[in-house]
Length: 177
Image (cartoon, rainbow, N blue to C red; front, top):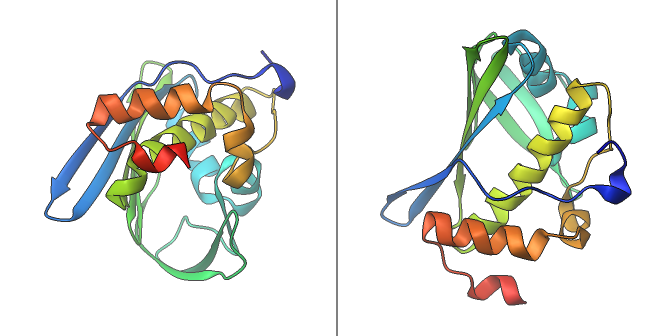
């Protein structure tokens, strides 16, 4: 499926939640058909991020330091500190950690993202779709970024958020609004 209009997310998979008091960490695992080096570039290069991620960065995330990140649907950039940039293995900034493991000729990508517990299933579904877009981008068949409020317009969004809510044991009352 290369056409954005035909895109529909597959079933929820690879999600866990770790709870520490009121802090919830969403953990998502995705196996990609691309090398860790290629995935690393997509995670750190601002031009690549604009094609798939739910945020934009004003500079590369590939080195430790401060960058400004603007999440989709917001207008105010957030000063973000990259605290770990170990190419092509690990990337950490603010409340987000990425790990890349070689898997055959591809990569096992793991995301840890601290998130408000009320929005865990939305976050999981949003990242799921972002990973789909990333995989297509790296395969040379981009369907364009699907993030922010646009993500909720896609066929399968409601199903996907419900599946993730069940998978991670999250509340779903906020998703009916």
